[in-house]
Image (cartoon, rainbow, N blue to C red; front, side):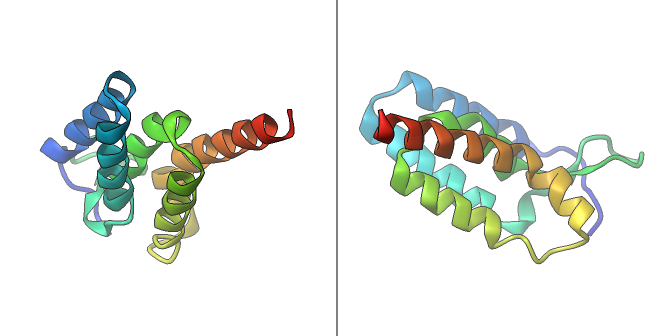
Length: 119
């Protein structure tokens, strides 16, 4: 898969995820569902610099990394499934560059939720 130039969705999805911290729970849930759905969509793959070789990124995964600290357990489960659904595309290095930050953020959120349960 070749990267494309940056389109509107690459910035809007991250902006939307950032907005989730400033809205109430019902809207946060809607934002979470939209970002999680975007993370599962292969069409949101891009390269940061058009025309030059750069690691592949995924706009939904970028947004998911921003949103991860706000996810509840159910949303976290859905987010992990969305990322897992994309594990089959491209080379593993491409998947890591596109989803690595989101995977790390989701793992950290899982650890925080587990710690809160045991405390």
